[in-house]
Image (cartoon, rainbow, N blue to C red; front, side, top):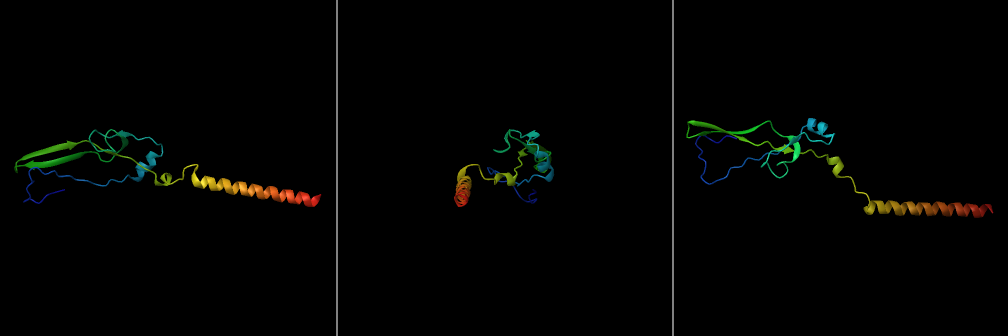
Length: 125
């Protein structure tokens, strides 16, 4: 981010820069082992601070010039991101209505099969 040369930072204001970070295909491939290689530095956010994940950048620095003469740099802590497999999130849980209906249909088919066997047996006698 770069401000125009004529811009003056306002006293007492807080400036924030946010970005949406998406994992790479390599991160998805590496995560198949279900082990994260890194831990996020402190004060990097709720899902990153001291949490396991993948580093989402090599470094984060803020370079600035103070009073047109003094150059400075602030190094920020390294955050991590987690990989989620969307296909796994949508699987139904065991139990619940789907299982109940499968059970009911199975019992009904079993009753029909027994009834058919019984009726054929009566025909033979």
